[in-house]
Length: 236
Image 1 (spheres, one colour):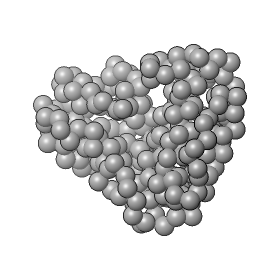
Image 2: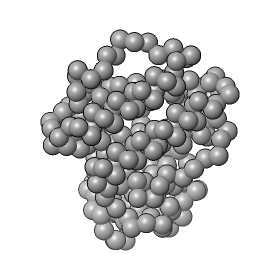
Image 3: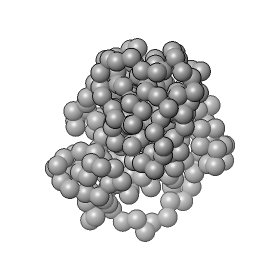
Image 4: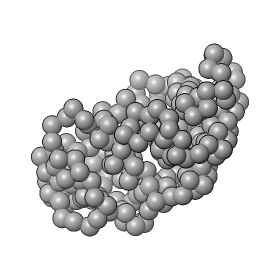
């Protein structure tokens, strides 16, 4: 389930490159992004380029200047450049180097791990919006992202929310990966009976956690109200 740092960097390269390939091939940058309804395809591309640049600066403030506007005509080239620079900076940094993050884990290792899902989920967004063939996220990368999401990302997003009305068991059907999320938010990577079980491919479970696909795309066993409340996380 857990990816090494090198595997995470490979996943960022792969998913990031596929994202920019999709943007490059898109025929309409004004097309709306169904999974991010406030954005069009160009907005999505500018967002991810900005994410690449932001986290590069967090890890190495001397590595990139943020004062260059991203014009539509240069979007793909600048996006690819920002991706490669970020990967290079992450690869050369000490994973244990302390850096600011919005999560409880404050190091380069977290930044690297989280950028896998940034690239992968937004690649899915781009393919969906562009009308391209939509590829699932690789099972091992998706399972690792689920683990990080449950342990670090979701708690950061729900810290002021009331407890769940029950426990949730998540089970990947295509790769090793099981978790129980207790009503108080505690997460254990084990097989255990919950008030509701969500079963699906690792890609589908991750996309559901990110509100990209509906609950009905998963196998739901048990209390659907608990499942719906669990997935009702506001992702910014």
